[in-house]
Length: 344
Length: 251
Image (cartoon, rainbow over all chains, first blue to last red; front, side):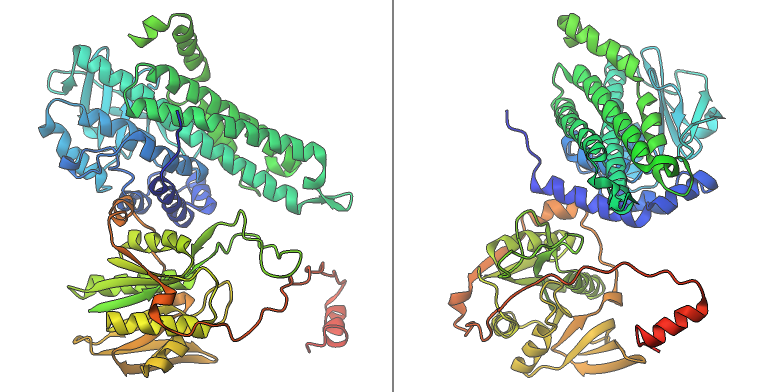
């Protein structure tokens, strides 16, 4: 099968990159590390105006009715910019989950507001129990066994958790399931939950690709200007090979992530396996790029003077988001050893 | 109101440009091509006028190779209504481009033409002025602010000139060329990108216009600028002043 992105996908990626360069420069992310709120209404609206937040929402609810293949390159850019906002949980996970509810009366008003950039939605379920940006979320979608519940923020108790990536906010959420808050149950609830996990893993994987790409860019830029022994350090083979290896890992991870996006968009039987595979290889590529970038920078890479830590810590944090590598390895092993079980 | 905005395909300013070994031009392989940044500002300004004046139409024009369709689609994705590409595979000189533009302007009859003040590849800064002269239209170049009268019969343009600002007012139709500070161009949204696919992009062969586009000049040689020399560290202010006086001869 030949797979390639269309011109429109590439053009949209360029637009998202351009907007993020304006509204999410490293200085803005550093400010979140220091004291600024992680959710910025202006940044969120800028992404909504591009069409990113409502990309997966049905047209009847004010969305664009497109699929994950149209979104994956844009999500890569959000990783490249180390966007602090909960874009994956809201735009990639919550939107299709809401759209999949049988009662459009509940879902459509929320979908319209998400597409317009008015709302953040938090999602909590296994294997991603801690809710990202619950402090900014107006609606929380929470899973209890085979039930999906929708709760306004006022009906949950959120406790902030320490996080190695200070641009992200994580919360332990306490809540009480009830018939009033239940929006899906049984086989339907299980299907929505499984789809949410696959999409969350895909989103984290796409962002990891962007993080890896940015780490390599930063390291290459530094290797071109830092001189030692009278030459740019990038001219030494030890540096060149290390960075080339990082780039190779990234380029080998990309098609795996794109295949997962395609499988989820087409609801293929292997979508869960492919999503786990994508998360694993993308996390591996980002971890390798982080190590390589740190080595290329040397001691200055450990300091606050350079922005490297913004992406290194994002790479490490994303590795544990929407399923750790161990969890995904287990799911992948199950799919390989008992494909019939996985496909069902 | 009909506004015509120009779009030129140029190498991305972020791209590292290499000159061909024989000096006959630049190496065009593996270059990312974009809309000339000053033309992007022209498109943005045209769209802002369209958003203010109900019933307006923004038409894009490019003169260049067939691949310039890509840059016209970018402008259409930003929100322009339709586009015209005058296909000229060989690069044209400014006067030839101006003559071609005049033909298009005569056919389209716009109320206002907005152009980048120059393209970042050739830096000629000539087409807007030449087209205005050929048409006998008023022109305001290097615009950092553009305002239209309520009846859209007059334009007022602020220009950045040495030592201050100059404000010009002129009757329409006319030609305005844009400076960097006129606006910050928008990025195309996904709905805009999808709509652009279906918008009209008309192609006209340059030969069909019947204008003289024969080159008047010959490119003799291109060469890259000399490599920047490393700076010099000085021990004191006195030494710096002395070197600025005796070596750099700037004070």
